[in-house]
Structure formats: structure tokens, C-alpha cells
Length: 152
Figure 1 (cartoon, rainbow, N blue to C red):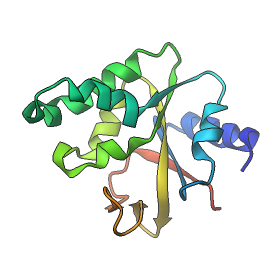
Figure 2: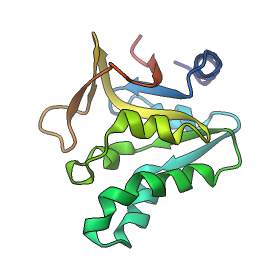
Figure 3: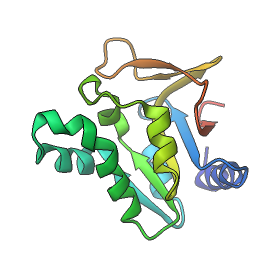
């Protein structure tokens, strides 16, 4: 998928009343590269930026503060569309984040495009692969996002 096609797909999905778009593809498929090329979008490297903010907190506060801190990172961008890249930190069991409600809450301030490493199968979405930290299979029920698959 080239940048122009991706831009068109994301623009169409965001215009279709989706405030969140998941760009789904396998590791190494070029999601991050394509998302960096999006026009007029801010980028939050969740794994780097949120981790930096969480490490300053006592461990027992990290779970309750993670989504609020991410919200501050999202809102700090002047653009109306923000890319969330390297989101594996949000899937860490110790943070206990319910991802769909968190994305929905974050999208109240800005439209989000989320780089998702995995695949969609039927009514579920997979993150990572079995044996990889953070591996998950989640139902798409109540998913607040439009989905764009890089694999067709």
C-alpha cells in the first residue's frame, strides 16, 4: 500500500464518523514508515514517550495514570489527527488498560490513527504472535475504530 492510497483510506475512514482508525499489518510491513508520511498528523511514539512519563511515577500509580498521560501527549499536538505508534506498552498486563474504551476516550480530543501489529480474523483482532509479550486476541465488538488492513 502506498502513502497516497493510505492517506485516502484514512481520510475516508475518518470522514465516515470514525474518530479512530487502526492500520493493521504484520511486523516489518512498513506501517510506521507510511504513517510518518501522513500529511498534517502528529505522531506519538507510545513506547518511548509514555514510558518516559510512566517511569517517573511510583509503580502502583502507573496503571491509573497511563491513559491520562497518553491523553496529554495526544493533546499536545496542534494537528487534529494524531498517530499512535509502537503501542505495545498499552497492552502490558500490569497496566490493565481496557483498550477500546481508552481509545474512544482519547479520540474525544483528536482523531487517532493507530499502528497495529497483527491481523484481523473474522470478528477478532490479534496483536503480535503467540509467545510474544503482550500477545492478545481481542473481540472487535465495541471496537471504536475503522480498520485498514495492509494485507488486503
